[in-house]
Amino acid sequence: MPEHDSPADSGQPLVPYVPAERRIPEFTARAVVLGVVMSVLFGMVNAYLGLKVGLTVSASIPSAVMSMAILRGILRRGTILENNIVHTIASAGESLAAGVVFTIPAFLFIGVDPGGFRIFLIGATAGLLGILMMIPLRHHLTIAQHGALPFPEGTACAQVLIAGDRGHTAWRPVFLGIVVGGGYQFAMRGLRLWRETVFVTLDRLHKMSFGAELTPIFLGVGYLIGARIAAMMFAGGALAWAVLLPAFDALGGTTVGALFGISPQVGTMSAWEIWRTYVRFVGAGGVACGGVISIVRVLPIIVESFRHSLRVLLVRDRTAPSRTEDDLPPTVVIAGTALLALGLWLIPSFGMGAAEALLAVVFAYFFVVVSARMVGLIGTTSQPVSGMTITALLATSFLLHVAGYSGSAGVVASLSAAVIVCVAVALSGDISQDLKCGALVGGTPRAIQLAEMIGVIAAALRAGWVLLLLHQAYVIGSEALPAPQAKLMATLAQGVMQGNLPWALLLLGAGLAGAAEVMGVNSLAFAIGLYLPVTTTTPLMIGGLIAARQRGGDTEPRTLLSSGLIAGDALIGILIAALVVSGWDRFVALRTPAEGTFFESALTIAMFAVLTVFFASYHPRSGGEL
Image (tube, rainbow, N blue to C red; front, side, top):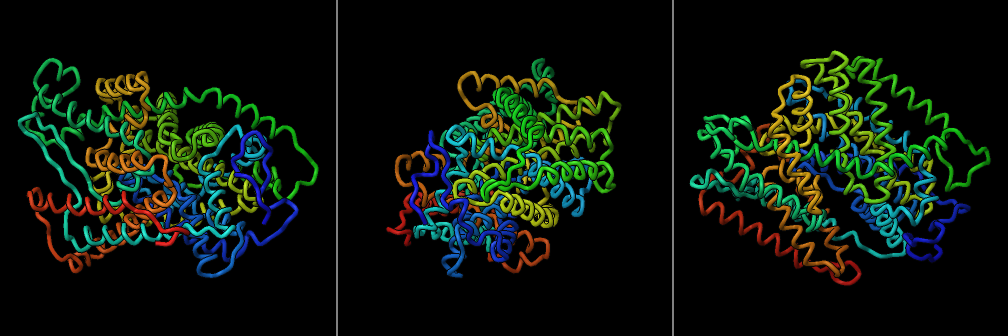
């Protein structure tokens, strides 16, 4: 292969690693099969992670590394373009899972069973809409804007693929992380050798509470999001549990308490009950405000992207494209989008009328254009999918309410539209990064677009049963799987339709998020911390501190190790869920750790300390050897 400078060189025209005139194996059967398997696996991981933490992580780089390990390391064959197809299919599964778990559980919270087939239809249809709507923007965003739009994950993934093609082995940390994370989770939750959570409530201080869920998944996520974002989320959590919760407990029966709707009987409630009843609405107001702020911040991007999208649709170049410029035909894009939009209205399983279907498609296109451009600037990890979805949900709820929708029917209609928007936005951001990666390595756009669609279909097929399995085992909405974004979606839609939102608490949260923004703090990250349980935000800070300590060194091996920890923890978590549902978990458990004792808390902290020291001190040998 020819030698090139870094694929992210700005100020220079994009020169693909594999030239356009060269044809090597790309869209092969082995690449598709391996990609589908990894799409299902990473989709399962992110489904579990999204329900538990309220965050998801990009599967692009881990899937690219694992693809190289299997194709090059085990099968001793495979080209860089085949590896690119594998990671494209796999990352589609991760993105679809994110869109589904952020929204679909909201139906469970309002007493509606979404059903496995309906989840498949929603995931597949919305995912394909997001892909098709983004295709006309591909050349402008990934080629014409090369250097101006960095596409962080797409560029990083291209660097990994090119390094692997040149012989650099970096896949071992991922597999080590999977073994360690999975082993830790199985010993903790399967064998039940120690507890996973430490939690303390100080009754004398009006139930001020502290706690942490000490698991590999939070350690890895905290490292990936970094110290800055982790600190912002931790600050929100500390404010919620150490300030707001005691304040609400103290305000019961007072004039100020009545102003915020605090019951005089709040003193009889536990810390968790106060959080669920009052504090979480403050967080909901903060997240909604943070979402609106994130949209306002990118308004110039929205306007410019719409202008370019219209130009692409109106002006058609009839010259035969080169291999690296060969997209799916415009007729396929337009006809496919139209058929999918009609399906939302005409297929009974969607349960959508003409009004909500139209709103879903309009808002989906609007935010797909925003998302495709936004990820080029800040990446998919920092992309505020929840903020955009909340904005679309509020707008849809108000419009449908004005149109005469009300009650449970109005809530279902609003949530149905929001689900379509969320999944479409998640997939448009993902394919934008994948197409940028493909442009850098020299992939064929048409093959990448088809691969993304295959990944969506494969992930949609398993999305429903994984979601329902986890619900049956742990109960979605419980402390084990709080599903914070979906709970917020249901709360806001119900409040708009029923006219009973606790506006004082919501406005308090919005004010706190606005104040954070004024002080230079990311309002959305702060508000998510305000909304999440303290047991989530505290351990994220530990991983973030390790990331800060490693700044300036070689962080790639530990980044891959953290991805493996997350994957191993989540996959074993799903396995344990299957054991719980089948009733076999009691045959696996070796003991039943007591709750709240000093010994059990000390044991939990000690085991997590060992894991943390291992992670923080990890240094692979030269050449990627362990």
